[in-house]
Amino acid sequence: MRIRVLPDSVASAIAAGEVVERPESVVKELLENAIDASASRIQITIENGGRKLIEVVDDGIGMSSEDVPLSIARHATSKLSTESDLFKIQTLGFRGEALGAIGAVSHLQIVSRTSLEESGTKLSVSAGKGEEPQAVGAPIGTAVQVRDLFFNVPARLKFLKTETTERRRISNLVSRYALAYASISFHLIQEGKIRLQTSGNGNQREVLAAVFGLDIAKDMIAIPRTDTPKMSVSGYISSPSVHRGSRREITHFVQGRWVKDASLSAAVVQAYHGLLMVGRYPIVVLFLDLPPETIDVNVHPGKAEVRFQDPGAVFTIVQRVIRGILLGQGPPSIQVDSTWRSYEQPAASDGIDPHWNIVHPEQDGQAVDGVQQSLPITNVPLLRSVGQVGAAYLVAEGPDGLYLIDQHAAHERVLFEKLMRAWEDGAVEAQRLLMPVTISLSHSEALIIEEQIEVLQSLGFQIEPFGRDMFRLRAIPAILSSADPNLALRSVVDELDEDEQPLANEVEARIAARVCKRAAVKAGQVLSLEEQRRLIQELEACQAPRTCPHGRPTMIHISVDSLERQFGRRG
Image (cartoon, rainbow, N blue to C red):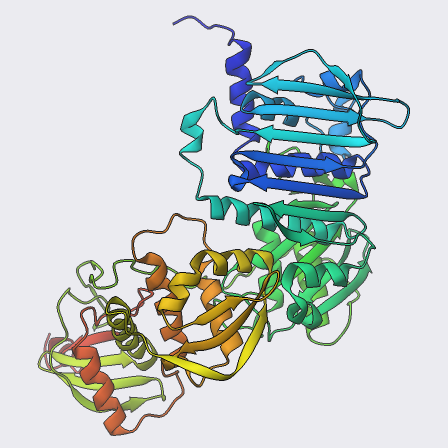
């Protein structure tokens, strides 16, 4: 087959695929354009998770009647002029692809006006084809409407998540930029509801409260601007008492650009090493400023990644600054070594079997130093309780050898199956609180609660909306009667903040698993012999006794043959 030049329509579709992955991508490009245009107020309106409408209106400097039609041309930009400019970028946008790419997969309308013109200019584009610009009345600034995203590429629509997930991603994006640009007033309206509103008065602490809720904002520790020869660092970090179940609240801005960088996240995690439990992560909003020539932002079409000229120095500075603040030493005097090593705690497994009554398939067990680590798919045999080791593991004897049982994981499994049976029967017992508890959540967390409120109620949480991003909790599952209601609900939100499409019963199973994790006996808790026997008996009666609801093993088995080999009784 001979080489051919692609038609413009195909080339535009390819470019659009690189820049516009989902509604969030559109909002990001338009938001960054508005910030680059020196806007002091930006309003974002979303309908149907961005599928039906995305509108971004700003009061920035606007575009002239000559520039509006050029704005949709590929590689047309006001932010670069020479190749060398790529290595000293100081704006958020620079590729000159965004509006053209968006217009190729939607019905796009741009209305813009500068202070030097008496009227604005309106341009309509559909599937990459633009109409003649029109003069219209308009305020100074730019308004961009994107309707029916991916209407001409239905295959792309199939890859989008649920509307709730897309709304959550957009809310998360806008919230992050509101944190970085506290002097800009952000207004996010989703499905007719105001989801975020900031004053634009420059007070970052106020924005923290608007994004994370007042309680979290009060606990955040400010990092005063720390200048080093390599870079400057500032921002906010949570105290070790405030943490989350994933890295999603670790946010980095480089030159005002929200980036996702594994090494930066690793530096943050290392800074908290020894201060947080494994599998728990802080809330961090970090602002890094480096000389433009020492970073490369031209790495990915989505501009979400950067390359550092000296990544080791960046890692070391971030880790030491945060560690110094956490240990009460204040911003340290940083001496950057050219050699460095990264450290990252292993992430805990978050996989939960959505079909809660199905035993996890397991591979054939292989003995390691005489210990059978993986067990066959059968119910456990009748066991005789022997005792407790380290206030964490139960020792039991079976007909085929010795069993060591993780008391916390085992109790999780027992409670989980009881709770799920009660849920299926519609008979989950709830413990009514003496006084209702009012809980303030972030926008993303509030969306999760709103989406899953019926499921939460069916599992024992009596909860009702109580203002924007606030809820009133009146009851919790009875098995959590001794738990802090606020922490109990937040732990559930941690488990549900995922992007994937939930399967049948998966949401219920995840909530139940998180509830049982909090209610189960903990490592370090001494159990009487009778309590040990009762827990083992209840575990024996479970349908999937060999794993906890999160997939971790409840027990390991040491066979009689293995013991005999260890003691030299058998070759």
